[in-house]
Amino acid sequence: MQAPCREDPIMPNPAETSENKALVQAGFDRWRAGTGSPFELLAPDADWTIVGSSPLSKTYSREAFLREVIHPFNARMATPLVPTVRGIYGDGDMVIILFDAAATTKDGMPYHNTYTWYFRMNDGKVVSAIAFFDTREFDEFWNRVSPAP
Image 1 (cartoon, rainbow, N blue to C red):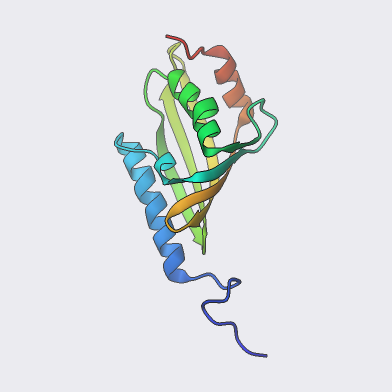
Image 2 (cartoon, rainbow, N blue to C red; image 1 turned 90 degrees about the horizontal axis):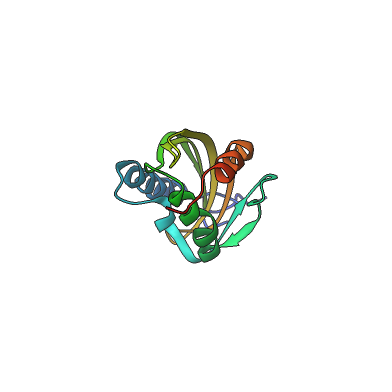
């Protein structure tokens, strides 16, 4: 039996893994500093899946995700959501980010949640994302705080 070569799709490429992790880390660093966001990494045709039982749990196109989730989420905040990364893990084209995020909502209450995002990368862009978080905490905040000024 012949050993698989580096181009074999079953064998992760260490350089690809390292590059993908570095891109995601830089995106989270910019987000934490208030100078960017990890959503800048989304490819135009990316999809984003929110896992769970929340009314928002489904698979979105990039534009629908930003329009239906991210913009209304940010509109409910008095302060920007700030991530604290616990770890970034990679295997080939997959990058997994475990992080906590906190902000103050428009009604003056704290928002805290722990997230795990799975990013499938291609050519330095996220082509598919899967998000896990406490949907009960999220739904309570989403229903309590209006995005209107």
